Length: 114
Length: 112
Image (cartoon, rainbow over the protein chains, first blue to last red):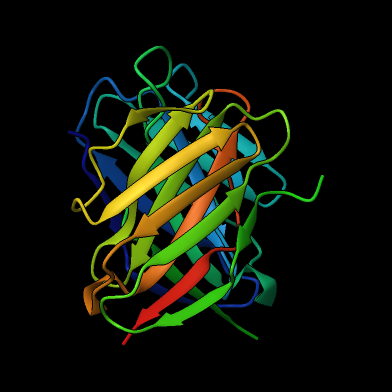
């Protein structure tokens, strides 16, 4: 089955700096890669996603890049703010008729220091 | 929409007792997922339904775990009998289309 590795497990940045989280996946048939943000006491919330026919996607201060050949994808947060402090999860799945089981990475705890 | 609603938010029980977790998906969503989150194992998919039918239950850890979806607006995850190692946060998620899943706030289960 799919295996998703996520690094780093913790990340501390100064407010205003950038944060980068990296994930690798094992199943070359995976074609959908979402990122979720989980705040304390809440469920994960989708913040951005990318499909395998796209190399990069941006939404305001966050961006994702995908390298299908190397089977890795990354989340970039620019101009970090204290409200960006949370746990971030990457995930991968094969979408379509086979179902949409998401396999999650282990999570990255991001702390933005004011 | 109110989003995915889970109840209870917290559950404390004693080993051997039956535990039932409840989930109301977003109206119109035809996929429903149950996950378990622990520090050791992260987020694990337990089972998911499509149009109320279980599609994949390969993540259900043991026969002590069972899940049902009697209609499009309600699902339960039952643990009988419960054990201390079942202590975790259990999430329900739903989706209208393949891939984009919306999570509930979770049920924190403590089995003493």
